[in-house]
Length: 479
Length: 156
Image 1: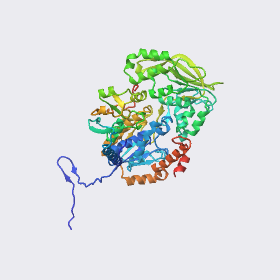
Image 2: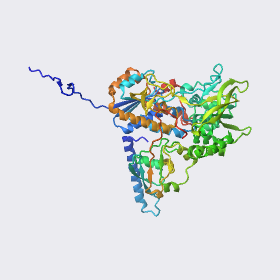
Image 3: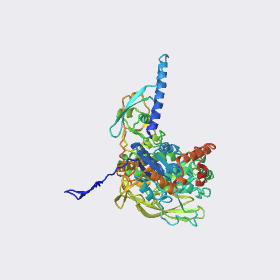
Image 4: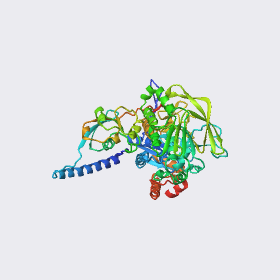
């Protein structure tokens, strides 16, 4: 018997030339997306549209998908939620699987996802908020103090973990909101709109009842800089001017002087100019007694919250002046202070993301460090790890912004898939089964059942849906 | 709108059915004295990469719908409710000038659009008229400044 050996051969130029036979079996690629909100769904949509052979598994910690589209967008802005039609088309694709009720980092480690999938996209958004960092912020014995606007919004929008918020709107008539963004305006609008106008929205029944019994008549929205540095947009400001029998108050002299001082720059800034025109047209310098009021306050930084006999608390502000160029103005304290007696105080100075076990995190900017969506760790690219949405860019921007951002991340994923190192679908499914995901997840079909339940319940009271606000109840309904 | 292979097929099948019905109505109307048929208008969409797509629609169709019916790469997150800026299109000067002014609501949304120009409109708010025959509609390139390091851009 002749043995046939394959012997390594030496070549002149390099060492040993090895003979090897490897057949790379063609297989579909698999991507995991952590976070089933707008960023996650738009990333998935782009992957579906631009590839034929990429499967996507979306992991979402809540049973319900859509993220802030469900829990952040105001109940009286239902058209904004039309984007969920596209999200549903994504979940309905045979290449997409939705795993709700699964918290990555808790019952499913990120490392497991990274070794099983060809790429993992982190799109879990921002679940916390920035604190003011002032004495009295946490109240006395857990009562009063400053409530995050994020939590107030989550409360009236039915986020399960926010339902325990003790919202008292009866024992005072004045609310102060710190922050000049759209979330602050949403809160002001919900507090000042006639509750009967909200009755046909998907605001929770409990929030509606609380608002019906509210005695709040005055909301003051305070920012540390001036009218030309606000972060909200004209649409939301315009809505405040349309609330009937409401005085829209601001310092008209300040608006006029700022507009005059920076007239040339303002002329070149279409959106801000339109906003200043709106303010000039609608705002009054002082309210009328007996009428509800919304006051837009400028140049005040909060320094302390103290209890007050009557109000039942007071928030102290330092008055600021502005220094520097108009598009990078700095608030500088003047040493003068003013006290505002009030009841509820909301802080609305920004959401904040939290770190995920196993992923790099920029503790200062509170985002996943990245270069155009590819995650980095100390400047080095982390292969196969990506970020999309607020956790990538910071908690700024509307749904359209997040859409474009997610598309750019998806494009990077697609480019990199050539070098992917994931497992075949069977191995992934085994991993998911072993970690208990398959047994405890809420599937898309189950979510649809919950959605139908909520729609039916809403029909009884003329609302688009009556949200289920308790996770156990959700699971009972779908399982 | 997301249009996977199956959805496109269904949409095209629907379109064909609609056109067949319209054709039979058109045939029938030849024998009536008043023809109540909307005129068809043909326009050209120009995608960001230069790709041109001709599209024909009935008068009264909005430009976003027309784009979607013809697989033009135009988004429409809020589905025509004037609550976003993703169907933003750029029109010819003369067409833009001939249109009625945008409402405050549309202008508020345009404020936030990427690559806004002097002749920008929301596609969902512009309805086809026979005057628009042959007009060219540019899609803006989505090159809005996405700072890679999370820096905050100046006001919109």
